[in-house]
Image (tube, helix red, strand yellow):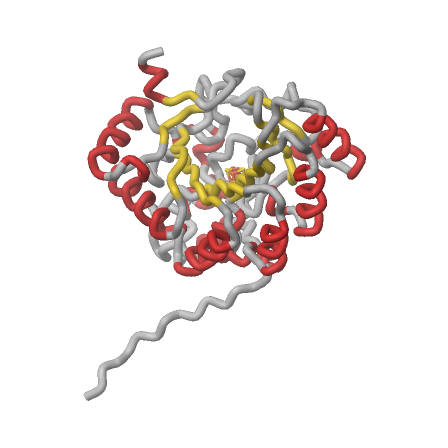
Length: 341
Ligand code: SF4
């Protein structure tokens, strides 16, 4: 008797622009897709008034249906807890909103961060910029020339970071134009892109993007944002391999989130899966204390316990640095230093 061979589900990839235009924005639809009943949904659903829901369908496809505790689902589902107001949590935890020249954040001496696009493909509920006035940072080409002149005129800047929002929300021809300008500045040694887009819509790593990367005159570092091993499926792994082959250095930063990755098993699995996909763990961030995300907070004490455990389990190159951003500080602060200043 012949054995039944299970069918491998075929994932049909749609162009990234189509995925962007077809994100799930209604909590009820997300619950229905995952076969979750909408009990107490009204109170949770109201939290989208605070910060819109936005979830690309390829990211939903990596969630486990029927599981309220799915670690990917928890990152994007609106919750009534977002209405709680806890002391120490604010709208602008990193004091970014008052001291901004349009389009550019120059917090670190040697690095300038360009806000290439406001908004992201996905709205992570814990996002430290969930209250950020991206609308005030919409630049035209003239504004870009001013931002570029700022970089040109400061020899201390040797690295430009494209951030946002998510810089890969920009069209490839705009990225090519911007990076051409940057690569002509003699003191710039490398370019860095902070993005979550390929993680939530892998087809963003399209031919045009790869062609642009191949034509770049500067070394490119891509810092991805992946919080849980389940975010790395075979499709994403294939796209990451394409980026590696194009010469991109791939790093990851994760946020330590209660109910998502706050266990040694989850952190170990994340590091292992990242390495298998050609990505090195870089930072594990403590939550920035943004209002509406209190329910994701993990204490420093628990974070240190977790780090001690994963240091026992993993080789050093797979252990990310546990850090916190502190408003006004010139760099990220290792959490150990917070204990012994
Ligand atoms: S991808 Fe990053 S910047 Fe965008 S919503 Fe998520 S946490 Fe915020």
